[in-house]
Image (tube, rainbow, N blue to C red; front, side, top):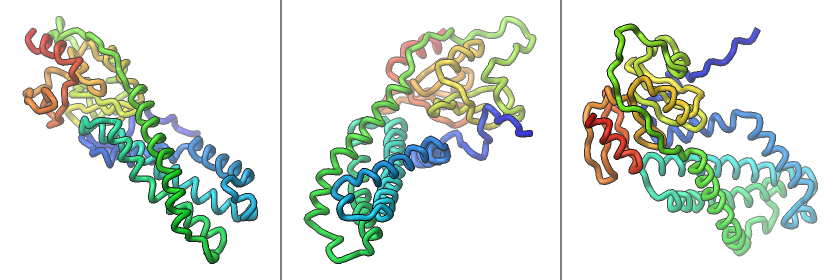
Length: 286
């Protein structure tokens, strides 16, 4: 009998302060391990090989087109999926301009994608004379560039819209009225037992949230907006579109060029979003 999957990801698979690169690689691994990603890729390869666009129908046999479009499409989608995810992670972590990062990510994929097209043609045709045409390489580069930049920009825009959390007004921290231990919230009940229930911070990670307690951290399948409502009894506050923090675990507030930054007992540093600063100030003063 198959055991049900837990609502959380084991500690060994996540860290409280992952870099944009490690987060992007972890998300890429999750993406490519799912069947939907490969179903779409295989369908695209088969359809393109049968249609034979860009004169490949006239120049190549069907097996040659399978090799050509299979290697090109699979490599290109893998590369651009990673670059799109990494661009989003860099923007989220460094607070850079998302449009600029998306354009740079698209530009970074141009030469590898165009190179893969020519390498695939060489593999499909046995590197026959004339397979490497410099003028054709430049023309293809100019054709591919706008497409790749548009892909990374659109993907980044969609992820921004998906992760835009509405400003909420959770209650300020209130000391418990009764000494009795309160019942755990939904999020606390989903945590692995060894992490306890003393939550320090919660960070949105796509469809999951990364929950940091005084004993470690774990990934839990839950939306941040639901977490904010669920953790109201703990007296915390959403301070960023991707962060909820327990105010009792705030060590100090530092001033940075990007705005106030909370330093937590877990040594995590959380930048306070502009639209959340007034609520935080009220909560800290009360």
